[in-house]
Length: 266
Image 1 (cartoon, one colour):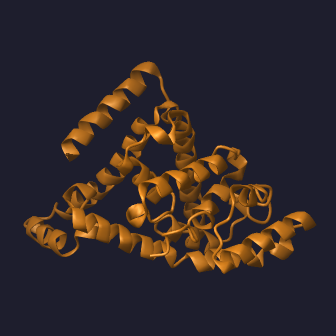
Image 2: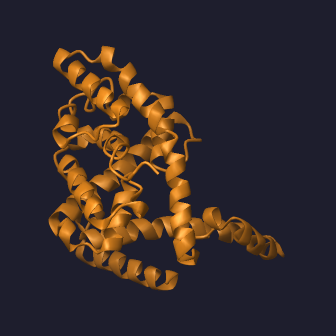
Image 3: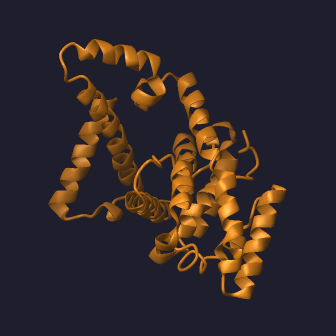
């Protein structure tokens, strides 16, 4: 399966080179395939480096057996492991949700516009009450996330660390690298969203829908397919309305749109 993925990725890259196509110009499925394959290859390279010293391969086999979630890619997980490991990863990113909401509350006094202050306070109150916010509730705040105090370039180190955990990215990097990783990761998701909007959510298989939702912050493993499609439609409404300068809102949307969604609180 991994070998087949590699051959497909090579075909896509060859086609991009021949026709001078950029990543964001690819169809949705090809973009998603390249994104996932890069992640898989990174994990495999790490194992390859560990295996370089003489006789280290015996230790690597033992480590793979003891730590399959951390060291093996999805191709080597059993169906039960796939569900269990996704639950574990979601539990890890959920730990950062209260911290991120707390930061949003703290910046309310820093918002200069009184109307935006009120909207932010209302949104935080809804989140605390367990209410799932409407799309217009989130989009009403897009200006706050374009500039001070919540623009991508204005985020503080602790905020970025919490957001990295929510995106399943390592938070143990200097602030400059954290900001770069968050920008890059969010930009890729935004590009995927535009391609997916062109394709249409209705064209995705059940597994593709659940994978797309999980990438964007929803623990879709225990949610019905139709609910996942509805949620993904809401996400695309928000994402496709945002400019590149407002991508900090898309980053925070991983928490805002998923935390109180029906069935997502496992």
